[in-house]
Length: 86
Image (cartoon, rainbow, N blue to C red; front, side, top):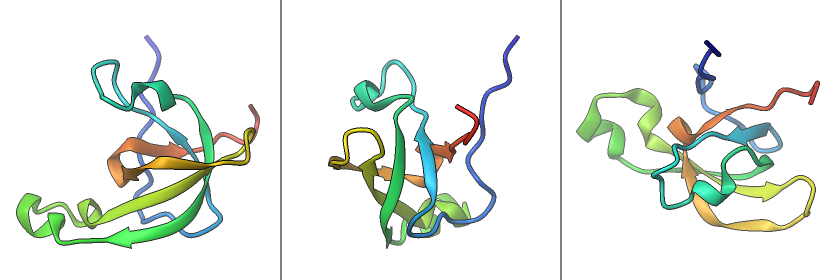
């Protein structure tokens, strides 16, 4: 069985390369597997509601291959570090 990739233990920073990893029932499933660069790091108070420190972070992304800003902001839990070998 394949291991499920996990989000980073620390917030991503501007310029980091990430891979979008969402489930098949997610409304933004069409972006699953896309490799992107973090353009902007956003914060809110969702962590206060969930008790999970990294839930405060969401990210504006730019697609690496298409060089376009995605119209969707993704939460930390939806992103995994991009494997530069691919």
